[in-house]
Image (cartoon, helix red, strand yellow):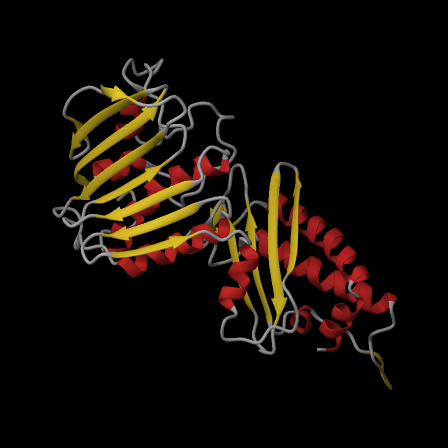
Length: 352
C-alpha cells in the first residue's frame, strides 16, 4: 500500500499529499495561498496559486507532463532537480497515488495564459489533457479534486478536525502561506496565516503553561540546510520539543534534535562558567546537565533537508548525520549572542 494505511489515517493522508505539492511551490517562492474544500459528496478540492503543473510534452513519456505527474509514481513536479529545493511529504509518493486511490479525480491547471483540464477514473485518464479556456497573464495555479475509492478505503468520510489540525500546523511552519479550509457538508470554515510562524506555534503549544519570558528565535543556514528554531521556558517541569523536517513531524526525533540538545547544554554551561553563575558546594561546583536546561522548555525545531533519510519504527526519525553539526553550529553561535545580549534571561534559565 502506497500510503501506509487504508483507514482514516490513510484517507486523510491523501489530502496531505496534494497539499504538499502546493507547499513545495510556496517553499520555492511561487505560492502564497492554499484552499482545501471538503465537498458535500466527500470529495476534496485542493487549490493553489503556484506555477501550475507543467502541461508541455514530457521528453521521455511523449505525453503531457501534467498527465505524467498525475499518473506516474514518483514523477512529481520535480522534473528539474533544481526547480524545487526541498520536498515535504513523508511517503513522498505525490499526487499520482492520490489519483490511483480515487474513484475519480479532476485536475485543472492555469499556466501560460491558458486553462488545461484532465479527468481520471481509478487513476486512468479519460482523455488527453485539453485546453479549455484562456486566463489573464500571471493567473496561475493548480486545482485538484478527488473522490477517495470506497472499494479501497474502510472509510471515505473526512473529519474536519483532523484536516484542520494538519493545515494549522503547516501554516505555522510556513509563515508565507495562508491556508483556508472549508467544509461544505456543514458550512464550517477556518483560515490560518501566522506571520510570526513558529514563534506563534510555540505560544500556541504553551497556551496552558506560563512562559517565563518571550520566545527565543534562531534562524540560520549552513551547507544548504535552513534551520529555524523557536523556544521558551515555562513554569512547568516537563519539556515539550516538537521537531520537523521538510514540514514532516519527526515524532521520534533524530539528528536535528540531538544537535539542538547538545548546543543548548554546551552554550548555557559555557555562559554559566564564564559568568560564575554555577553554585559552589563543599564538593565543588555543581555540574548542570542537559536535563536541567530542558526543564520547562517548549521548542519547535524546523529544518529543511535536501535528501532526508528517515529511520525508526514509523520512519519518523531523521537519520542524516550531517544535520546534527549544522543545527549544533547555528544554535551555538546564535544562542551565545542572545545570552550575551540578554544576561537577565540567561540568569533566569540557569537559576531555574
